[in-house]
Image 1 (cartoon, rainbow, N blue to C red):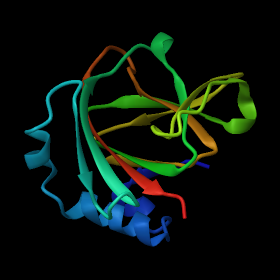
Image 2 (image 1 turned 180 degrees about the horizontal axis):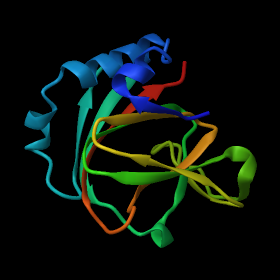
Image 3 (image 1 turned 90 degrees about the vertical axis):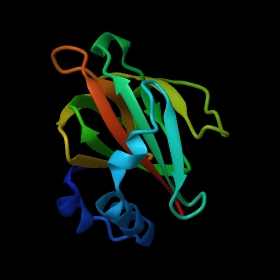
Image 4 (image 1 turned 90 degrees about the horizontal axis):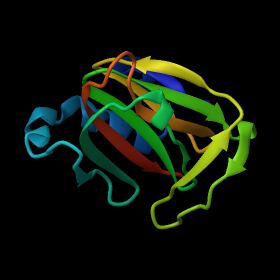
Length: 158
């Protein structure tokens, strides 16, 4: 089940050592200096704890809900943090899959169609933890496309 809140509220719910390292990274790193190197629709990857935990910095324009793709992962848990901007994320449990896409092992990614979903709003400073059972479609506009700076930290499932 997804966990949503600020870094300080999710910190207490994330009792895994890799989660704590990830949240500490977000809390203590000069994120602005890294985002200066990230151009729109490009990413910068930074290792936190080797391939057990790494951050993906991304800048993009949100997209309409009609372009949403529900994605899922098997090897990593996502911690998604909005550095600036606002978006909505659609979420559905795996049990709502009506057509599962092919799993790309190298990218740890599959896209699936779901019967229905819920959504939540992510504002600047908010974070969420998305587990493998949480299919999700991030980067979705609320009213109109807007620029978002986001960090996705991938935490390996041990």
